[in-house]
Amino acid sequence: MDRDKILLTPGPLTTTLRTKLTMLKDWGSWDSDFNAVTARIRHNLLDIIHGHDSHVVVPLQGSGTFSVEASVATLVPHDGHVLVLDNGAYCKRAARLTSLMGRRCSVLAFDEATQVSPAALADKLKQDPSISHVVLIHCETGAGVLNPLQEIADVCKAQGKGLIVDAMSSFGALAIDARAIQFDALVAASGKCLEGVPGMGFVFIRKAVLDGCAGRSQSLAMDLHDQYVYMEKTTQWRFTPPTHVVVALAEAIAQFEEEGGQPARLARYRSNYSTLIEGMAQLGFKPFLDPTIQAPIIVTFHAPADSRYEFKKFYAAARERGFVLYPGKLTQVETFRVGCIGAIGPNEMAQAVLAVALTLQDMGITSAAPTH
Ligand SMILES: Cc1ncc(COP(=O)(O)O)c(C=O)c1O
Image (cartoon, rainbow, N blue to C red; front, side, top):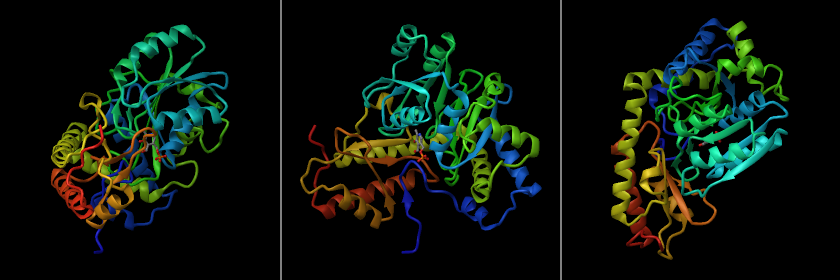
């Protein structure tokens, strides 16, 4: 059937028809109408974190990783030392890109089924005064863990360290208030909880550190300070903007505001999450994480123990029924993931659970219980 499948993935995700329809128009990058859209987005993004007094926001072309890389390149001096708090795959990616950019990088490792620890961070910073910046992944989308942003930010502030937050999969859904949480940079993207389409990221940079970032990036395309200065001066993007992505994001933000902003978005995702968890539990599925550290963004489930289970077949059969699942990203145990985000509600999630139930039936699996 020629109908969009529902994406139960952490981005790209299901978007509304309204958002999709805005992409049917062509926009010139020099045109004042388009530049007004960029300005409106930047204003609205700062509203979401209550950041007008403390931060600027700099959009950047590309997927989310481009903006994480740009943040490290722009904020960390060449002789800086970055500590990555690592409890999963996106943390490892952040550490890798930091090293590739020639910045000294250390990793404080945690189990992927736990949160990173503010106390362990405090100890590490005391032991090694050369650390200048800390990188935290707010929601580690690899397993779905919600990390303690406020507490980590408080430790960094108390010890005078810069904090770079990857809030890619949490921004817009989980509360982030720049008046209460001090960070030097916070990164997110268009195609996540704001429910736009993928293609641009944006970075909130603390005004107090902005001037010091001039000329620091060794990459022209990744230089957020340069992008900021050019955008302020001309109202335009430095290089070709992803015009359709930008107008779709403006439309998605308008719907975000109509829905009731971050609290309403979180309430819908929580409702998706509980519908999913309860329905899957009835089929025998077991979530990988303890619910107390689980973000209502993406859920990792253990693979069923039944020998007839095979992810590829399971995925294909659920897809046939209109739902796109996501493979697991853990190295030690076999899992798969289901996203709770996107322009869907609990009705769609209940249908997704039904599709999974029918898929198991087709595969001859009577219980989805894992081995442990
Ligand atoms: C925590 C986190 N960081 C970074 C990214 C960026 O990934 P990409 O470059 O594929 O957009 C993602 C995407 O899902 C993410 O969840």
